[in-house]
Image (spheres, rainbow, N blue to C red):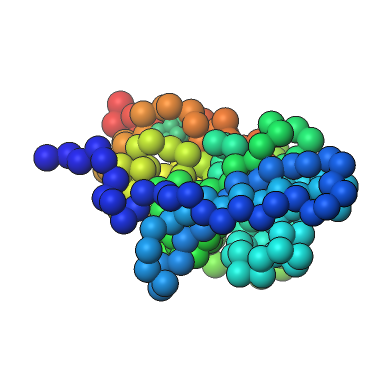
Length: 260
Ligand code: SF4
Ligand code: SF4
Ligand code: FES
């Protein structure tokens, strides 16, 4: 029977409060999910009161400031701070976003930060993306060809052919979409999720790829593809303005056309 209550060990308890420094003029309250599976105990929500004037403008700046000045044990991923690497994806005020491209001034006075939903937590804001990457790898995200490369040139594309893959190829694998998808929450072991399906679509429509039939064969499955129920959360949250829901619909259409 389905259980709708979290086990007691998963309930989030009240954490530590770090009061604002004396002389604070622009107080900002940030509540952050903390969890260390190696240490045991429940996850907790720590409160950090900051002087907004001491931080840069983005949520990632706030996290870096907290780690540098208040609690060096706070753990999160980040690399590029430019919305390129996808590593700082987290749930900020209820929405999956990139911390480095989310301005604090666009958020409510109190900021709440959790790891991406429905994934095991490695520590604090770092989710375990092992399954997510395995699903990406399973769609064989590389060019597959049967014919030999022409002797005198590369495999060329027209401008129009390149433009077809331009947007889907801009995915930064941040996982904001898949972890916003209710179907993925319930079936993440069997449903590939929007990020992997967008990658599959990107290669199916690549004019140079010669494995489109096999790629569609692999996807034709009640769980891998058809667990998408067009809820559209994925497209709503994508920080790169991509449209995985539409890509999934296009794949379904290709499969339908193949059978008609
Ligand atoms: S459109 Fe499909 S993949 Fe996107 S959130 Fe909805 S169910 Fe998930
Ligand atoms: S489709 Fe968008 S939200 Fe999903 S992984 Fe790619 S960049 Fe992130
Ligand atoms: S740090 Fe690279 S996307 Fe945010």
